[in-house]
Length: 145
Image (cartoon, rainbow, N blue to C red; front, top):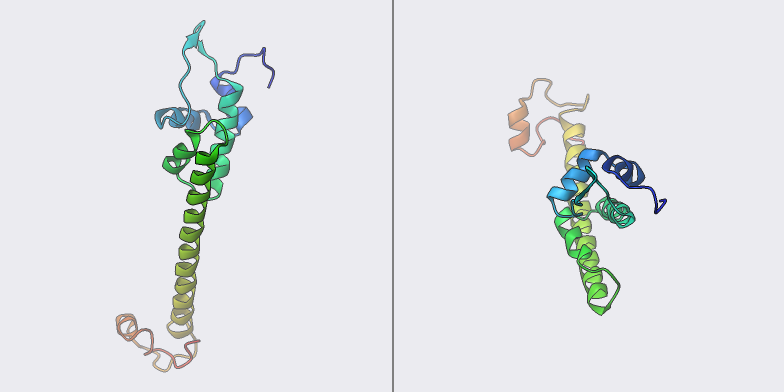
């Protein structure tokens, strides 16, 4: 960004590829500070653009705003920041692995449901959906894979 040109909220939003309301939201959440008015306008910094871009990148890999705020307290890399980044990243990886496992279980359950009650190969053409559910989808079909 041009250092001489004032960065208004609209310019900031465009440069960071977010909406103006997102900027205000980040201010309410103390991700970025609301600058004081100069000649009736709030002027933001290039640093604000960089922070918002980092926030978006970290949200994209699964971090919440509260988690991201813990990263933003560090303004440079040091042994403490490296330790925090490593710990939080490894924790996030484990959370994502758990989510993947849960989603794989959900996929298996949906396949069983689809292959039983959604199958044209039903044993009973008028089996009751609640009966199927209570019998773990075994009343509608013999092909459950």
